[in-house]
Length: 107
Image (cartoon, rainbow, N blue to C red; front, side, top):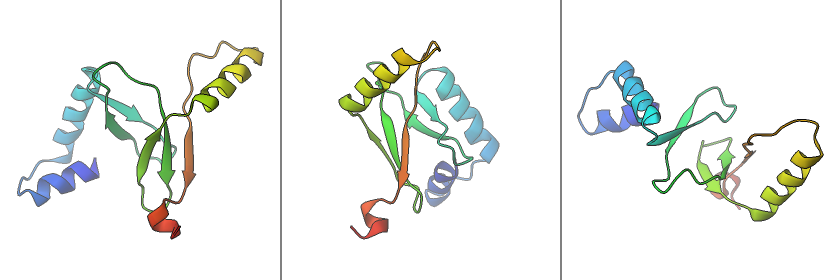
């Protein structure tokens, strides 16, 4: 949300934070954005795939906050096998890998 507020301010538009929250909530209800709860205490949002929400996971840089989506077929297979062994009806999963991006780690 702060990124949106900053971008609007940089463009010379003064919009209240509450207005931004209302618009984001409306976009979420319309299925145009997806809420991401990454365990950082702040919800993030990403555009929804217009062809239907394609399942993916995320890499999150703990230093700069960079968020990169990724898909890994082997990870999906392993999660599927684990889910079959559990005495629980698994309906979904989210995986966020935390670390440092190449810019922050110097790699």
